Length: 204
Image (cartoon, rainbow, N blue to C red):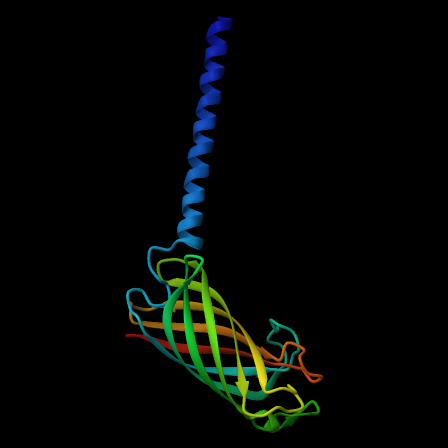
């Protein structure tokens, strides 16, 4: 009886080990598929070019990811052309961007009219998460605004962006974004620009 009991325990332990290894394997594979090695590029699929237009609402904040609690009369309109690339085998896109900010009046001692300025910059976005139609990405870039001002006292700018996208089809998507511009403390004035917005995306 003791021998049978001992054999049952060994079999039970083996089953638990096999089950644990199976669960670890499934989880690891799912993690790799979901986060690291998607079957297709979530930005563009099989297409090689992408064009998007975006519109954003400005917020008065000096931090990297601003909470949407202090909206101001400050807006951004952007056009973006992108091509697919990878970042350590993670799907990514490299883009040329042209944006125009628009301030309408003075609020909270800031003259937002002064910050109406064209900006040109190059960015790269990396897809960190994807499902069948949804993707999430972070991106960074650098460029120039036409003139410095009391908000950002430098023509040279850094850009940081968080994107949540939804693919309606292989060609069309919509993206929600949080976008931040600053000079990286390379000048005395560095209060940043911050926007929440939406972009319409077309692949071709």
